[in-house]
Amino acid sequence: MNSHVVTISRFLIDEERRHPEATGNFTSLLHDIALAAKLIGREVNKAGLVDILGAAGDENVHGETVQKLDQFANDVIYRALDHTGLVACMASEENAGFIPIPDKFPAGDYVVIFDPLDGSSNIDVNVSIGTIFSIHRKISDGERGALEDCLQPGSRQVAAGYVLYGSSTMLVFTSGAGVHGFTLDPSIGEFLLSHPNMRMPEPPAKVYSVNEAYYRRWTTGQQRLVSHLKNEGGFGSRYIGSFVADIHRILLQGGLFMYPSDDKNPSGKLRLLYEAAPLAMVVEQAGGRASTGSMDLLDVEPVELHQRTPIYMGSRAFVDLAEAMLAEGGG
Ligand code: P6P
Image (cartoon, rainbow, N blue to C red; front, top):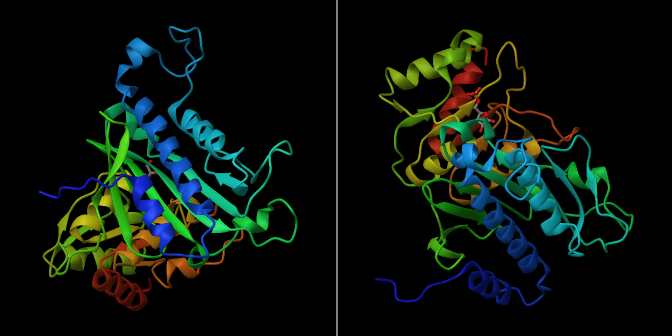
C-alpha cells in the first residue's frame, strides 16, 4: 500500500522545484485549472437531478437561471483565470472569437485554449464527458494577448490535459515530462496522484474506436483500413462517442481512435486547437502517436480558431498502420 498521499498541489510544487528558473506561475495556472475542474465536476455530477434542480433556462430554488452545463463550465474556467495575471488571452469552443483579458486585470504570459465540456450531448444519458485544455506561451509583441497567440501548432504547447467526469473525476495532464493522472477524492476535495507516469501499454489492446455509421461516407482507404482491422487484424471495437472518455481508455489500454474525414466533413468533426492538439500531446507524451492520417497532428499550423482535423490517435504501431493504408488506398 503506498503510504504517502500526493495531492496535485504537492506534485506541482515538487515539479516546480526541478526547474530552478520556474517562477511558480505555471504551478498557479494549473492550480486554477484544477479548481475549475472541481467546480465543474460538482455541477456535472448533479446533472441527473435536472427534474429537481431545473433544466437550462429554468429558475433554480435560489431564483437563479439554470445555465446549460457547457456554458456554466465555460464561465467557471473563464472566471478562474481572467483575474490571475497569468494569462494573456484565452479561446474556447463556446466563444466565436479569441477571449482577451479585461483591461481591469493584468495580463500574463500564458495562453489557455479549452473545450469546457466536450461531449455535453452525452450528459442526458449519463455518459462520461470531459474538459480539455491546451496551454501555450504568448508569442505576440503587444502587452496583452492577440489572436496569433492562439494560432500556434500543437508542438508549441507547454502543457495540455483533460478532466474526465466519469465514475470518478480524473485530471490528466502533461507539461512535457510525462503524463500524470490525479483522481478527485470528494471527501476531502483534493485531486490525489493516482496514475503517475502514465505510459501506453505494450503490447497494446487490439481495439479500434470509430463511428462506423459513417462507413459509406468514408474514403476507400478508410474503408479498407477498418475492414482490415476487423477482419485480418482481429481487432475488437469500442466507441463511447465521448472523445475524452475514448482517449482515456486508449491511454490506459492501447488501441486506435479514429475520427476520419468523410464526404460531408472534409476535415472531420473534431477541432484542432482545443480537442485534437491537447490530447495529441498527452498521447505522444505517454508513448503513443497522433496523426491527421497523413502527417503528425502536432505539426498542423492552425489558421482558424475552430478549424477541424481528421484524427488517428493511439498506439504508435496502429497509427503508423493507418497512415500506410490510407496512403495506399486513395486515403
Ligand atoms: P459522433 C461528442 O459530441 C463529440 O464532440 C466528441 O466528444 C465525440 O468524440 C464525437 O463528438 C462523437 O461524434 O459523430 O460519432 O457522434
